[in-house]
Length: 250
Image 1 (cartoon, rainbow, N blue to C red):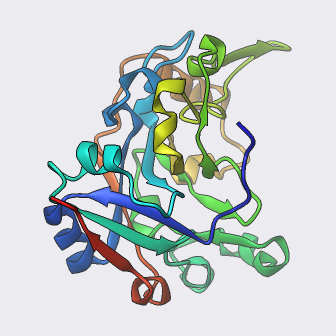
Image 2 (cartoon, helix red, strand yellow):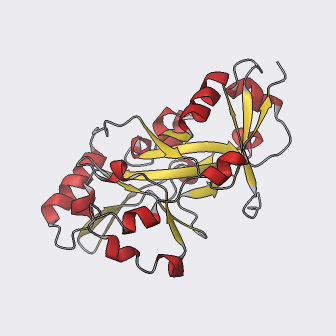
């Protein structure tokens, strides 16, 4: 299937209860890929369940109402469908740049030139558990993308452990980007945040040692689970004003 250009709006089917929380907190929740309806897409060809390090929010670009999506995600057709602008999240770049707690603010000086937006509140980066990759460039396809449908097992369960030149690295790139063809009716778009089990301070330290990198890889290879079930991103004020809610047909 040919990939389409960036849509102006995306749509999310959910329950009345979830809508109430979205309106109350003005946030969109990202859940672990390992908790989605298609458990297979969290798996890889070599490291099993890598989806526990990836948080996603799932939408569709189809403006026409979908009876299958109403049935699956809105509790017997009685839920709602939310319409929001493409990438509706609050941008924190200026707050990071002006925040003395963020010691690497100098790296954001040319932020407008490279057209980067950062959607994570500070508290998610200011922790010793992990670092979240959530710098969304306008043309970036790693953190926002149209899901591709296929029955190619090498795409459904990609190998992520790469070895070469005496080094080992893990490539999350294609995890969560492909689903089996039977899911094509979803016409899904997805936002993705990747977690690395290494503190942001160590991640940004150019002098980080081989031992710490190996410890990080060991956690990913093992059954280590980041003790954070979800991530909530704040909806931008302008996007929030453009939100449209459609009641289910039930």
